[in-house]
Length: 407
Ligand code: C5P
Image (cartoon, rainbow, N blue to C red; front, side, top):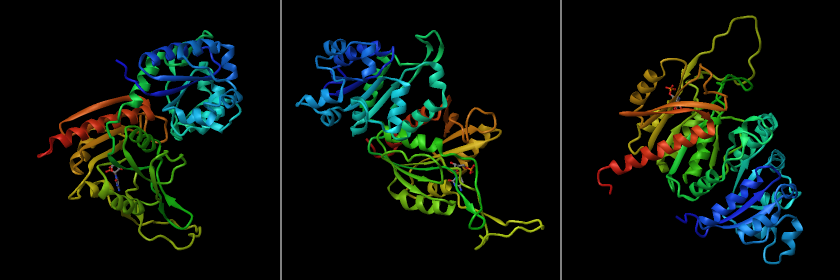
């Protein structure tokens, strides 16, 4: 089946041994009906001759910035505009680092900067280089800016090492490209999401908060955007880059979060409460910094409004998804909240056994809905978010079609 008919793919090849696999990818893309143009970095030429890609794609291969400029039919800005997707495969550690830093000292880097279309990278490198904190930070930064990061795979490497760093196989990359062009399950759906911690002021310089980093909520926002949703993200204070394409409403306290959610909820089809909202606030916030004394001090706390419970109690309510972070009796507490807050779904995780939760980059979830459930195995928060958004999409569309009067 020619699933990619009329799709224009710009394939960037950087200097890595996996460059030979990209030749196979070009063949698969052409077979699937796509139009393919190839851009190589100067280092990539050391691995595979441009002629290979030229023969397979049926078009000249661009290497130098000035090649593209010399081709009056397609200068570098036009090339960036021409494509529906720019995929860099293999993407070396060096290229990923330069991309993250915004370098533009070769044609392919320039195209990555100039592209308004989706950009994906398929990392390929030695496992030790992949494990390096600098590579992890660069990939995290690209991901936060909306670049799709596909892979890497784990296994035997050209250098003899074994571990994560292999480029995804061409057939796997083709499947990702096909999935990318499928209309998302949440196309056009308005999704409202809370993320991060809240801060409850004690005085002008001190506050009560919790360990939430916002990583899970931000990963969910990105996964929802990729599934086609229009995302409004109400976020407590975090140090994460806002997901490109989401409407971000930054708040500090639970009261501010409540007000922002209540204002935005009228237009929402789905509400995901991922924030770790402070259950209590300080009853009397001091106007000035409280002075140190030798006396014991007591802070009077009053409960905050439960935002999720308030949304789910609305007459015209969105599909409501809650989170439950527990240190024990996960299922019992999660089912209790599902019922008490009248939720459509709850995603629960243990925060005490090291398998995920606050601050970490991995997570594992037990998801429940009235009459059913599903486990999401431990994986990166990105992957867990994708699976949870798929599940929410399934349940949400199921709930819509079960409504009386719907077709
Ligand atoms: O009852 P508990 O706070 O453990 O419930 C957790 C769920 O409720 C999470 O989805 C959280 O985002 C939401 N919540 C809320 N407002 C609060 C407290 C919790 O939306 N004040």
